[in-house]
Image (cartoon, rainbow, N blue to C red; front, side, top):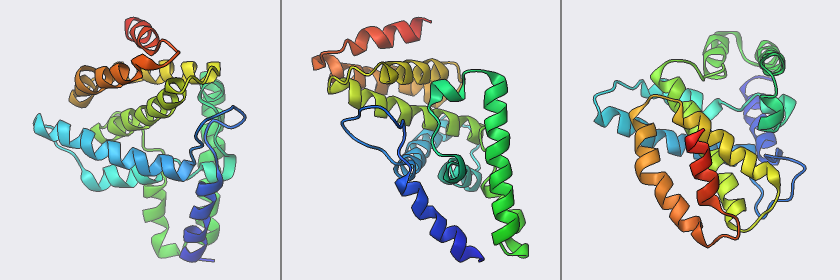
Length: 209
């Protein structure tokens, strides 16, 4: 019981593999994904601050480091399935949030419950920090898919992942998104030019849609 149960539960995130059921040259756990999202978000937030945008760093670290904690209870559900419809996405979110809330009720000491409810909440919203989380989350989806496409993985799932994440990112109005599209993505596409899969074509089609 108590905080020990929470700390111990973090081991479960290491055993949940992202994009289950598909051939992958490299497996990625939810735990590793969360760590990378924090790293992306730090740089994205620095870019925002360099343009005069105020960033709540405490909030940013809380929501990025804990954004997928609920997957301990429901696992990693593939993006195309998760976003098949708004109704399905809403239902999955309700289940995930309900399981997290129950976990807090049953295991977290009373004096710490408000803190855990804040930290383990759904962090993606219209705030600067929530939008940075969205971009960072989708960036890791892009990088995971890119690594598979670059190696010649012909699973259609990774084309869908790469394209959907890129389309989502370009719709977010942040300075860091402009930076990603102008300076980071071109380097990625150039690096992928030796792949048997035409990553440049997939990228251009996503950006044009």
